[in-house]
Length: 276
Image (cartoon, rainbow, N blue to C red):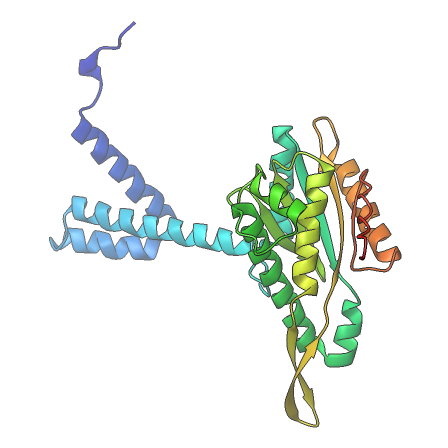
């Protein structure tokens, strides 16, 4: 049944009511500020409508600041990548969708040795450069802009179903990074994506700044990562997914580091070439 239209306030009256509510809520939390506004209205320098507009603009600005702070709270201060909280939120959201996706865990090889030999500033430098390299390389793969990949990689990259708007790579803490890759359908694809990321780190010269005898010195050092990964399939628990990924990373480190191990996948051995 339709309600009596006459019993409803007009659009203008509704707007005024909302403005009053806005002023009242602001008054409850900012009494000093509101007292100044009311005094301006009482003195005839401001109308009630103008006061409501001022309050509305102020609240809008405050909401924008809150959103900005929320976004900052999801970023790692050192690398600028999504942080642990952002990764955990993304992982939970993807699991709720109950669709396949890939999870990769990266660990910088011998990172403690870098800190011990060159200092924590050099270590931070390595973390920042690793974050930049992983992020840019993943973006290249996601958009198909992968420079001179091997033939099998070229095919996989061109046919990847995921994209840069869905992927998330972030720093979990210390020298650990994670990548969450929605749409990756199987272990083979995940392995080749991980290998491209691993190679991008290995091939890049890392320049770090150290201090020796109170003088600044720039050094080029080799950096590699070990990678473990697994595929989420509908029905799999988050605990088991993370356990499989951790186990794969542990295996990669135990087998010499600078390797990629994907749970449940055995890569084909490289084909031998006949020399003539």
